[in-house]
Amino acid sequence: MEFLFSFFFFVWNFCGKSNVKLIESLQERALRFVYNDSTSSYESLLRSSKTESLQIQRLRAMALQVFKCINKIGPSYLHDLFESKDTNYHLRDSNVVKQDKYFTVKYGFLSFKYHGAKIWNNLPANIKTTTNFKDFKYFINTWEGPYCKCHYCCL
Image 1: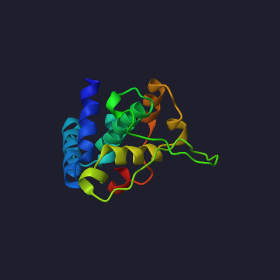
Image 2: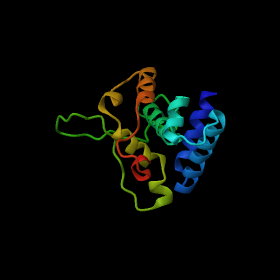
Image 3: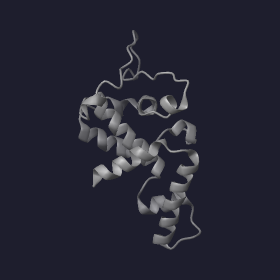
C-alpha cells in the first residue's frame, strides 16, 4: 500500500500548475467534508488532520527515490542517473549532485533527473548525509519542504 502512495505522488509530480491546483483543491474539499468545517483555512485543516499538503508529499516521495538512486537501493537502471558533484573545496554541504542544464521542456525541465537533483541539492545537509534508508525516511518525513513556497522553487 505504501508503494502505491509513493508511486501516486511520484507520478503526479510532473503535472502542470492547473492540475496541481485541482488536486490540492480536491484534498481541501475532502478535508472540509470530513471535518464539517467550511470556514477554516486549508493550512489549519491540514494541521488538524496531521497531514501535509500534497505538494510536500510529492517532494518527499521524489527525495526518497533520489536517495535510492544515489545509494543504489532502487532499480538498477536508475543507479547511474545522478552523479555527485566533485569540488576542490571543503564546503558545509559537499553532498551535492550535478544538475544538468536543459533547453527543452519535455525532455529537460520536466524530467526526474532535473527535478530530483534540484530537490536533493535543496535538502538540508544533515538529511543528505544519512546512509540508512530508515533514518533517511524518518528525516525526510520531518522535513517541512523548501524555504520558498512558490510553485517554481518547489518543483
